[in-house]
Amino acid sequence: MQNSLKMSAEDLDFYYGDFHALHGIALEFYENQVTALIGPSGCGKSTLLRCLNRMNDLIPYSRVDGKILLDGDDIYDSNVDVVALRRHVGMVFQKPNPFPKSIFENVAYGLRVNGMKDKSFLAERVETSLKQAALWDEVKERLYDSALGLSGGQQQRLCIARAMAVEPEVLLMDEPASALDPIATQKIEELIHQLKDTYTIIIVTHNMQQAARVSDVTAFFYLGKLIEVDQTETIFTRPKLQETSDYITGRFG
Amino acid sequence: MFGLFRISAAINGVALLVVIYFLAIRGWRAINWTFLTQPPIDSMTKGGILPCIIGTLCLSIGAIAVAMPIGVASAIYLNEYARPGRIVRLIRLGINNLAGVPSVVFGLFGLAFFVVYLKMGVSILAGSLTLGALTLPVIIGSTEEALRAVPDTYREASLGLGATKWQTIYRVVLPTALPGILTGAILGISRAAGETAPIMFTAAVFFTPSLPTSIFDEIMALPYHIYVLATAGTDIEATRPLQYGTALVLIALVLGLNLIAIIYRSRLRKNR
Image (cartoon, rainbow over all chains, first blue to last red; front, side, top):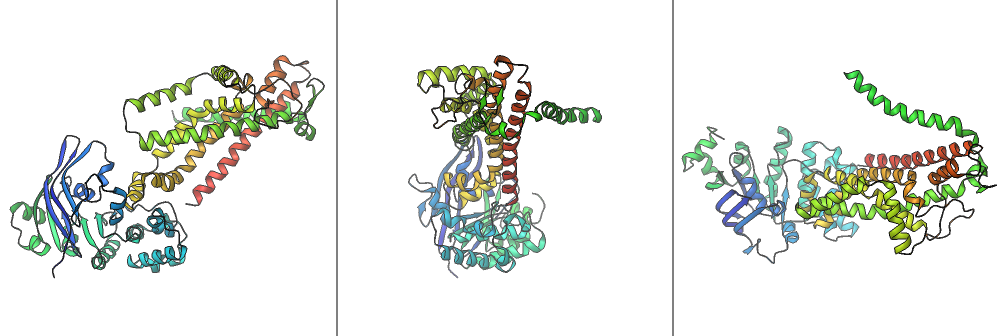
């Protein structure tokens, strides 16, 4: 299957103050594929992820060099509307972070801030998103209860539903299952499998098995550099470099 | 050692109870329907304190109406928008010093600036502005604390969904921080209602039998009324019960205002 290019980083450098966190990253992300970013803590994989929707803009004294292209346009160009960008490139965070609002309001939030007021449209989209996130059956009776009353796994699926409600094209996931138990993790992974039919998914994970299970392409980072990127199967069975092999087999990291 | 800490903590509760008990014992006989609903008569040795109650309510609400918007907006600027630097440090220094200024200085400032220079005269408006300035640091401090307590993950989630910074603040940060902000308002109201020095030059008068009809009217106020009766009344000894009765009403008013805000706050928390 030939997938078309959705996003790419070109010669990307990132600095936190004096700390050089990413060195000349060049990486391509394709539509309807799951790309996993792996590597030991502090290797820059989360930093890269957060560059892809300019979440790093929020960090004082940080700096970006190079380009990130979304459908061919540089998202760091000075005339890019960051708010609009984040509607195209959604994000699910490491810890479930639902707002202290009702389940319904959580999912509807992204639409409301976009100015959507049509009640039937909102209700419909909330239902669709919750179904996509495989949460609808568990919450349909209590849509107006607080989201904070859900379990951790449910909260994370709610956050995925919330991200999908604005219909982004790319979904960034920063260790989405690291705070969850095995059963909840499995649900999230099944979900990722289904979602790649619709979205371009980029996922950061610490869990090798998870990367192997959910991704099509895996990129291995170490000390702020992209060491190796290939089809996931190739990376996990016949990595070209010794460092990749060492990390995957658990010899360091 | 533990016992010592416990005693220290207990002293607070006991102190409040002793104050209330002391006032209640001496003042409760003065309190009746007439006392609460009539103006003073016979050179303030008889009658009620209605103008004072109304006056204090007006001043408290006025002070909060002045201090809340400015204070909350300042805290939002400092906590959400401003990048740390010299200007922010200077503003904070100003706020901290404002908190330390004696209230009588605020009174004199209010007299010079609002009453005389801005020609507001001795009025509810001038008093509210002066009390508002006095309560600002309390409101800013507690609002900032409430904003800091909102997890950054909420802000990230909101921005990640394509919300603007202001939408994030308005729809997520402020509602989450609201109970904490209200706590500040409670403290502010209590402080404003009980202050005497800032209003004695700016809003309160010795005696007026009529109730205010506009914010440019001068008024009587509970704390100032107590001060007047206890130091400059026509018959200080004979009006002792009136003084204690007035003090009791003031305490009840402050506690009542606090109670309303506390109930509202806990309802907000429950609706999460």
